Image (cartoon, rainbow, N blue to C red; front, side, top):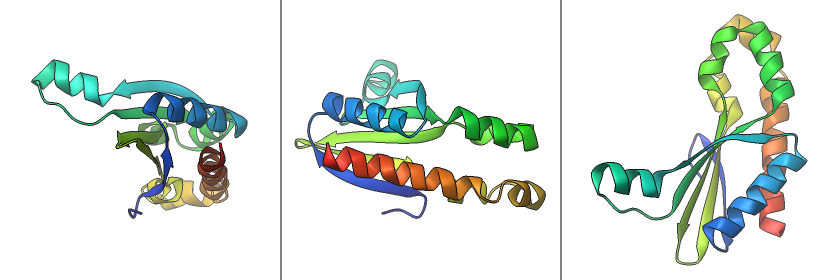
Length: 134
């Protein structure tokens, strides 16, 4: 595990695992706002081939609103990226650790939103648990 991500690896195709991730995110109050297919983008733009690689931009609207109400610039750190990377019949699911990202904001914002990163991290750990069990 990296210092800025929470991860798991599951058996399946990237499309199947993506459906599991989206369902698990939804169960925890997140929606997927964006999807970037890096495999296709890199092939189309610069002619290189990589493994299946999706970046999903996940957002919990209540937490996002709470954070934006305290610090409008915090939008630069949103949404929470979820990466799906496929290889050999498995998919690695990585989610950006909200506590690490939150460490970038100023002290006043950290104090006003002290419980939010931990709450979001718990929800995202549950997402990974659900993806493993599906």
